[in-house]
Amino acid sequence: MRLKYSSHAKDQLKYRKISLFKVRTTIKSSHNIIPSYKDRKLFQRKFNMKIKYDKTTDSVYFHFNSSPYSHSKKITDGVVVDISKTGKPMGIEILEATKIIKGFNPSKIPTRYAI
Image (cartoon, rainbow, N blue to C red; front, side, top):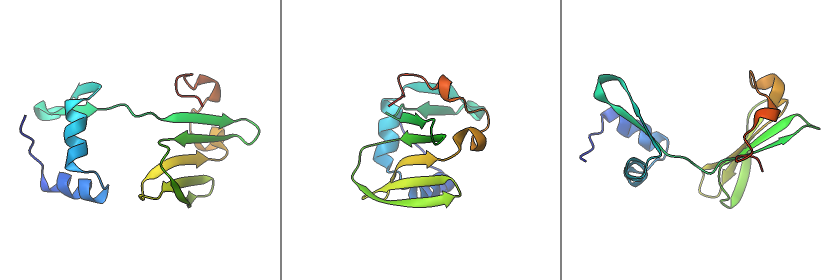
């Protein structure tokens, strides 16, 4: 399959630090293909995200990968992103999760994602 990238797509890939190799890999080994407008297709690939909820602090942690940790970056009050040594997000912690995330119900976290 020949891929055609718009200038906007190229800019977004560069901005998000996504390689063309990763795009091709996702398309070749996608877990889900969704029809989109104008005969386009959206290719999705599952990632091994884990979720940990701490009811004592009402905080939730979304863990994306186990890359070596570099630092944390505060996004807003109650939202912190852990950054790997390669500069990519490795996890997000949200404090007061049931207040910040509309409709969040910790008891409905699928067990396959729970840490």
